[in-house]
Image 1 (spheres, rainbow, N blue to C red):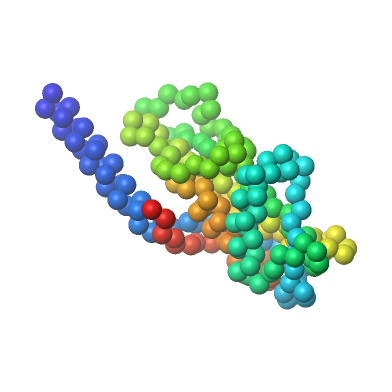
Image 2: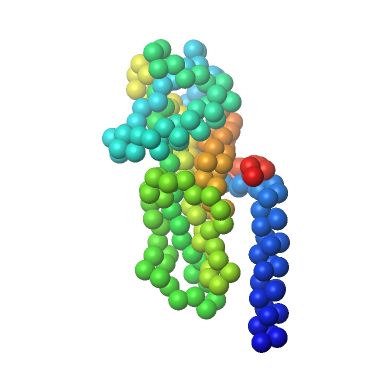
Length: 204
């Protein structure tokens, strides 16, 4: 019994320390891949969003995704103008989860090692820690993408994506950071894959 109490105390202390740590700054490191044919900011620097049919089916949730992307697009000098767009912006957002295969003493469940795709994990935002003390940490996979086309010619002039995996599940904050990271270097980013790091302080 004494040993059991000691183990419980240790587990609670570790959990408390982790929660305190989670309240501080977090480093979001994503894999970004960008390709551009732009030599400068388009003139005028305007755009409109275009949704795929599958995104129309999740209109309420996707409106939140568009709002996060719009903030990132504004920061790189673009302005939303549905009436007079110079560019057409098409967005993508994915979410899923998996667990490490090398976690000790773990008995796989039916979803072990597979990703469950779907915006916001079934259209819902998640916030909190994606693991428990008696099981393996759940790694949440998120990906965003932005494709910009010339509104007149329909030619793709910019394509970028950002991918991130972590136990952290504050979806609004993470998707917002990923859109900013995907657009880093716009309109002339380094071509191909690269690592982009951003330190943020989660909202309490």
